[in-house]
Length: 220
Image (cartoon, rainbow, N blue to C red):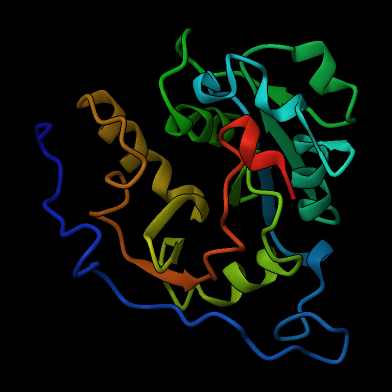
């Protein structure tokens, strides 16, 4: 265990308060009648991985239902005040989708937390919402549901029956220092960095968080 890292029980006995999914929709069809454009949130598509199980292809540019996976992720975040794409290759191609592209602060493929760190460094909004580029079945109201699940916490993390889904999250900018500390201590596992912070959970169905990690997963 890295120096200074909090102990935790994963995935059994997950620690911290529990956020409840499926909030009631307001008159405008969004949970709590929150307008997405009013959320102080920067949406971030995490597309900076090595995609080894996809044969080394740039996963975000692989097609699912006729469109690149990154297109589906961007559509999910559409309407937020700011959207960033975290990527480490094909940068010019990603820029063609019309949003700023940020790269990891360290070269190489060191995991999704490096993309979150880069997003903290560039985001203009006080909250950051992350989604992986390879989960095209996430619910359309995910931003609103994550926002409603905060209840005073610094971090909201999705979870399913298989456990925590830490790359689907909403993080306060105040959490950036803890992320920097965790990375500086050698931590790279996405599940560990928020253990020391007040956090809540948003429950999602297994099919909603399904990943397209390998070519067979692209079959629908």
